Image 1: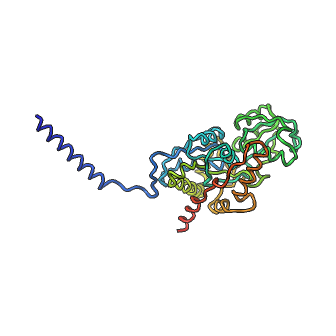
Image 2: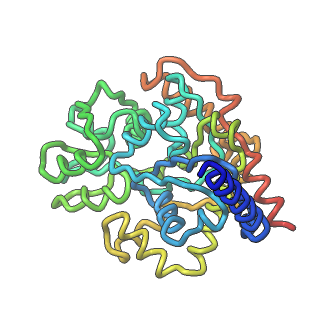
Image 3: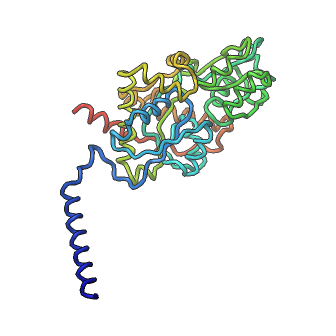
Length: 342
């Protein structure tokens, strides 16, 4: 009985060796640009026209085509994604420059590796009937999501008119709630971004007072990653950047289908979504290369970051200006540019 058992174990062992050898010989090879990460990259994104293309990338398998293992998480509240990234629950996130600077000032180690777009009108300060100038905002109730880009836009406008936040009654509300409060007549003005601008403008007599179009370059939007991801898995970061440019190509070649996907994510009609086009300037490869280059105006990220950092400190949104020397990493955009030239 014992000898039979030993022979059985030997036979089982030999069979497993043959099976292992067969699988090694005939297993399919890895796809091009296959990434070696042991777990998916956890990436957050939220409601903004410059970030909705990531939904197209997910729907059309463009991450997988680049070998990117992705766990793409949708956030209804933009600030929730900022907090998740700062807390280390995300490897990457879609963020504005000023919000990233604020996170870094608070101790987060984040790096901007890609410019998605510039806001050119899709961030708006919307007011009720009877308010016609920025000076008219004095003493009025104004809602916005505290510490985020539209709070920043509001302060820019107030500063231009010689006013400060103390000259208004600031009501800190999540962006969706701020839009709803404005429509309900609970506040006199609101700072919101698209698609919440569509909601806010449903209030009778409401209108845009000023927008990001009036402050060119002040609100660039980015793909931000943790420094840990760059150091542990730079191939994954490169894959994300490559996927973005693949997505832009897909959008150009499949415009109607892409609008449908993005509109569904935005919870608006395709026709409404097309209205956001002019208010968001999607950055091409050439735009990215220029933005990452040194310059003396807001088209340069380095210049813009210094200006925004100083403004955030002077406005009390951050207590100290952070070290910006490691905020930008252009190698992934440059690597894509080099590969696309070949």
